[in-house]
Each structure stands twice: as C-alpha cells, then as structure tokens.
Image (cartoon, rainbow, N blue to C red; front, side):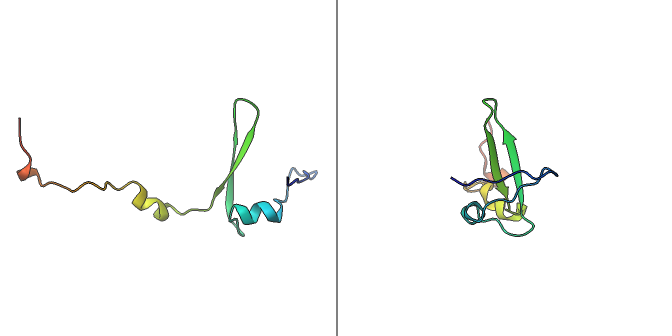
Length: 71
C-alpha cells in the first residue's frame, strides 16, 4: 500500500509506484471523485479527446436513405 502526506498547502506527491501503474507523467491531470460511502477515487485524466473518437462510432453499416423501407 502506498501512502502520501498532505503538506501545509494541501498538496500531496503521488508515490512513484502509483504514477507508474496509472501511467501518469508530467502535466497529466487526475480527477478525484468522492463516493457516498466516503471512499475517494482518483482517476487519471491523461487521454486526449481524439483518442476517444473510435469509441463512439457505430460499427453498423450505413444505409442510404433511398434504400430504407418506408412504412
């Protein structure tokens, strides 16, 4: 288990082991989410929006409007 201390300015240093596992580098951002049960989750925010482009595209074949069957 990794630990970090909070400084008087409210800052922490993320331990090297955690930075490696999360693939965090200089200038990457992290997001903290507080769950209802009191647990805090830290997620890496180091993906660009362009890397997500293929995740929302439909895999279905497009059908031209003229080929659609109208009811």
